Image (tube, chains in turn brown, cyan):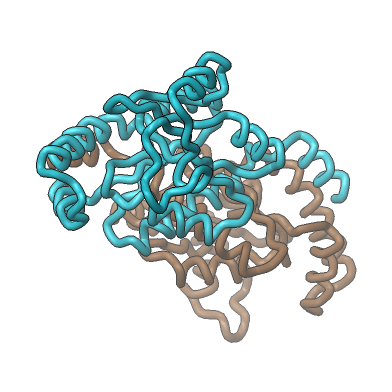
Length: 195
Length: 195
């Protein structure tokens, strides 16, 4: 899932995880300092730059990027383990990271969370009262850029009312699980044999 | 939607129609005699053979077939009107009819409703206490044939527990509505202009 800051990604994701069994949320790694109330392995995996750069060198990250001097990335190993265990994996990624993951896992389903309008997104960002005016303008500029890539995505969930957005998002995952193309040859064989 | 007699298509469809706005269920036409309690335009559109054959000749049917001496088919005009009005159209079809409609509307989404097992389907057919042994065997033979075509479908909803099957079915329609490929050029343009 990809979408602008303030569009409601965290809320939608948390609701979907409660709603759907067998869904694994991948926690990102970062070099940014741990804030009070945050725990290693909860909000992020917190690493120092040396460790993070070794992970990059060892190809231990599915995707990574540097923002304002800090690294952010997706550790590959928990994702692989979850997939091996037959779980679906939910990643929350910037556009660039989403493209990297799609490259590694072409069957990945890309969901874009869009605000109903840019002015509504602006209203929500101001409502959080956490960001400076400069940061709000930067976030809006980025949202304007990312929305241009909407056609690269498989699904667009518009977060107008939260209840509908959560239902749409959960339904996308539920429906994807019901896709006939995901039936393996073994599924079909055993299905037909029983018939 | 396609699936064997007794698999629960009617129940799933009725629940989905209550659950989802803007979904139009297309009523079939038939030449079989109207039974007591049935109304023209409710269970079926009831026509005599001459009228039905004129509809075939005039290309007024999306698909049709003859079973045990009676015609069954989908009137094209209500479907076209609903689509023109921006509604999604739900058709309940035999495999052959589903293939015909897919040919006319390649963007049609094909959903197969499968029983968890053939023996469970047999149990349900016997539970209805409406069919002769011969009819039950015919229905099971047909189910065995149709399941072989499961890979032609986009989605497979297994009706094991009804609540899950209804949720899966409704979610398929909800998710399909959120597909980015359904965004028109106009949608995207107006979306980007607002941004």
